[in-house]
Length: 114
Image 1: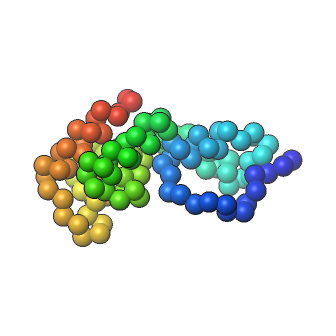
Image 2: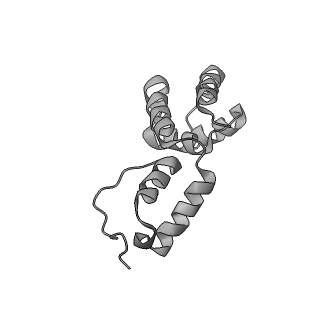
Image 3: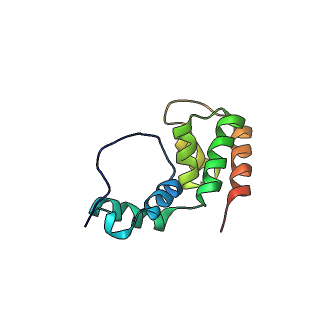
């Protein structure tokens, strides 16, 4: 039984969808226990496809000047209401206008798969 190496070669914040895609590329017997649990979690909670998640993260950064990790959190949770979105974005004490929050929700609605 060969497991995927545990040596970190590169590190990049990724959406749940991207993590799921990466882990699905490995053969089942190559995954360690932690990787299998992560794949199980990602399979249950990935809200949109990896391609859509990548595009959404890029758009959130370009159109709304959001940091990548904040855009990833939004893509992972796909909030439906301004209050949910505000809780993600106000952690740093940053104030975002109601208009910008509404624009972000409109963008998210374009990516929803449910």
